Image (cartoon, rainbow, N blue to C red; front, side, top):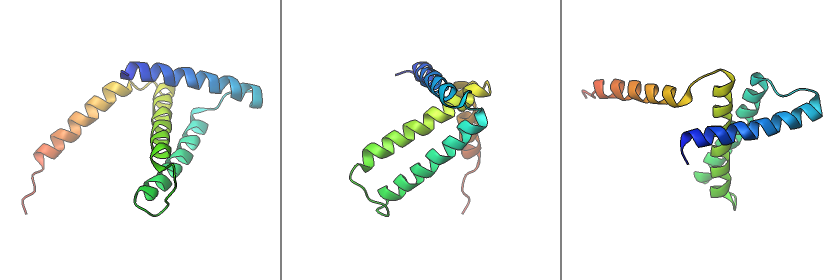
Length: 109
């Protein structure tokens, strides 16, 4: 799946959530509330990473980890949309910058 297709699917799911939120709460979530949900997902992800290290084992660990990583990616895409960030370009720019920084910082020890 191409990134543009991932964005389209994330937007479609976000639209469905907005409908559900409007029915339940009279409005859809704000970007700030989406961010709070993302923080919860990151906490869940941290627990699963501990599971991979043997600290919090569970039977469905690999599937749960994949699910939570995808959930976190969905939140990042939704937040990027909320703030009009071209995530694909920002990612490319950031990786180029980091690579340049790392290429220029050779260990002298």
